[in-house]
Image (cartoon, rainbow, N blue to C red; front, side):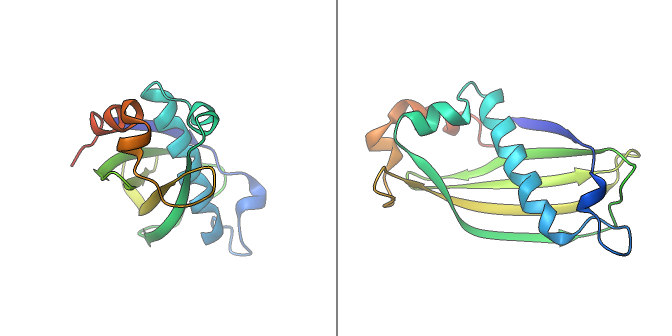
Length: 137
């Protein structure tokens, strides 16, 4: 499954060169993950209400072309790996010509209410199975 989100950069997200600052992309990634969870029928707040959390473990990205204020972009989010304790999401950002301008990846770990890594398959098999059904390569 690919979740899509339209991104309209805000002026305050730019740097002195008029380009979107590198610190903004992780925020957009989070927006995309929230959209992904909503799209598969498990809103993020429901996951948290069940006493589980997702913590960032690793993040990488590649800046291909500048992104700027005044243009709209499409963020595509895919779940590309899932284990019982971690998830890996891929992000691709496209401009109005549908040229990829940025790509990234995040690895997250399932945590319990004590913020310790947890095997989500054991504690919440329904959530694990729902995410497993959406893994794409």
